[in-house]
Every structure is written in C-alpha cells, then in structure tokens.
Length: 484
Image (cartoon, rainbow, N blue to C red; front, side, top):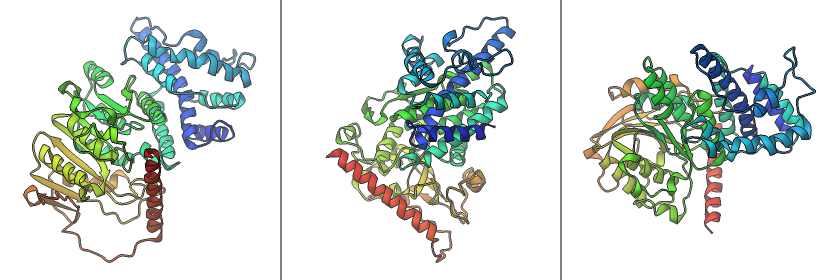
C-alpha cells in the first residue's frame, strides 16, 4: 500500500510546475507525510496517557490539526468536500498560515532536544514547492490513506521512505552523497558494535542512514529498560549536515524510525577548527561516509593541521580528533586514500597509524555505490593506541554490482565471520605495521593470497567507470570555477 501510494504521489508531482526532479518529489512528499505521521503519533500518545490515567497535551493546536485543515471528514468518515480546502485556498492556507505556525515552534520550544524544536527546525528549512493547490489536495488525500499506528505499519513506512531516499540518491550527480547501501551500513554497525550508553556520531549525516541503523541495532541488542529508552531517545545519536535538503531528510528519517528529537545540527562540520574540540565534545563511536571528491576552500583548510582540498581527508582528521580515547570508528573513504603519494595523504595515513589502531580495512568492489564508479574502502579503527597489525579483506563477488543488482548482506557474511578472528583466507590477509613503509605509509590493498586471473572487463563496467570519471571531472571543474 505504501509503495503504490508513493508511486501515485510521484505521478502527481511530476505534473506540477514547482517540482522538477526526484529530489523535489522526496522533499515535498516528506513534509506532508511528516504531518500525517505526527497526527498519528499524537493519537498514540493521547491513548497511552489515557490508559495510564494521565492527560496528554497536544503539540499541534486545533486549527492546524491534520483532521481539521487537511482531511475534514463527514459523519460517514469520507472527505467532507464542503470543508476541505483545495486550489488557491489550500495553497494560501499552507503557505501563509500553516508553515509560519510550524516555523514558530523552534523559538517557542523548551529545549533543542524536543520534538517541538525539531518541528520548528524542519519547517524553517522547508518550503512548499507544490504550485497547484489541486495537486496538493491530491497528495494530501493519498497520504491520508496511510496509517502509522502499529509497529508493522511504522516499520513498512520507514523502510519505503528509505527506498525513496535511495531513488533520490540515484537521481542526479549529487545524489550519491545521500545514500550508502543499507547492507554495507548494517555490516559496519555490526563490526563496530556500539552498546547502549555510547554517544554515536556522524559528521556527514546525509539521510542519517548510519544513525538509523545504529538505532535499530541497539534497539534489538537487549531487553530495553525505561532508562535505556530515554538514553536512546536523548543521549545517543548525534549528527551534522551542511546541505539543507539532506538535513531535513535526515532529521525526518530519524523521527519516522522512532527517534523523536534527533540531535542533528544544520552546519558545515568542516567550518569548525579541530583545535577547538574539547573532551566534552567527543564521541564514543564514529560511523560515516563523508563526501569524497569535493574541494574545500583555503579558509576551511585552515581549520586542520594537514592542509588539503580533499573533503574526505578533512573529515577523517575531524573524526580522529572528535573520538574519545578508546573510541571506535567505521568510515567509508575512496580507495585511493590508501596509496596517494601527495604530502597530505602520506601525513594523514601516518596520523591514522600512529594515533589509532587501524585494525581492519574492507576493500569494496566497483559498483558498490550505484551511479558512482569510484572504488571505496571502509576503515575500522580505534583511538588511543598505535596500529600493530592491519587485517585486509577484499570483497570479490562473482557478479557486477549495479542498480538492479545491489550489494546485499549475504555478500558480506564471509567478511563479518572472518573479521571476528582476523583470519587469513583467499580474500583476506594481514600486514604487520613494522612492514609498512615508514616514508610513504602506503596501505595499498594488494591481496597476496588471490590467484590472478586475466579476465576481460565487461563493457557495462567500462562504460560505468567512464561515466563516473566524466562526473568526477565535472565536479572538479565546478570546484575550480567556485574558487575563481
């Protein structure tokens, strides 16, 4: 039901002059979906309060409740067409009354860790782009068919919302930064193995996939006490995001998965001077896939001891600094990081090996990130002691990954199993830190156990790589033009 509804909404928005891409479809579906979800959440809270003999105070005042402005019903439970706004009346109400009302929540909220504050923040960032009030009426009617009352309904909806984000990730050149394959995130969370009480951080939060999966993992890690639930809701998940749309999607994704007031901040992580990070700012766990290929300006580079324009290299310095001693991390980075010979890359590898225990490197195949031909690795490290031995695992699959054939958890099962004991196999091997070149600190993932086979590459693979290189060239050119 959810899936068909989302498809129908996309068809409606496709016809609207204000929505030109998949990114717009997701953004506009999101705010309407969020208000319907909020309405059902309030009903659940009111029922729970009544059962325990308490009184529940509604967050949303009567005039702005879903059942009043969006879908007033007649005595038969059908949409009351005499009361339901449509056309210009509906658009004017949303733009001139509803959005300004919701925006005010940010200033009126008691504190930043409340759902009221998050509502205000979301609607301060968003605007209604649906130009036709008739299209908006159709979207509202479709979303009103959805229910978010049972656990199964909420689970299905959050799962399909993830699919929407994935489609957005595949929609354009900048889309890859929104979506990391869920199979990979789940595996990274499993290896890092957070526990309740850890503070978990993603400084390039995007759609909050890492935080969502860490929440799911912790939720099922033990029988939760009331204290555990409060800790998970208020004191566990932290993120920062530079881009407005990603920030909104990430915040809503967390709320739709059950974290009511996620500690996600709309800011440029790299604008913070890492010399200013103090002990109180640090986290136990870092989980992230920072954007790679970006080019940062000179003033941003001044915030880091190792100067480089490469966004991912700056993020890695930030992550190392912001981790507590004994903290653990799983970070996705471009595989060229392992062997680049520029001064910044060499210095950064030296910093990582000397300040952290880089215990595992997962080498991923091309096509892991749909639409991005770049090859990536995942670095697993702990802060506080230097690296003694690095265990490498090269994921070799008997198929090419792509949009219709994505990475799945089964693909990574062997890695998860062998990583527990850092066992050598045809796909895995270890390198003693004392054998790493002390001038270049080269960490190239060259598998000594794999029999080399002279295999011809598939035409599709070559085309995908050419496309990725073209896109990367455009990114670099745009960055240069920005600097001029």
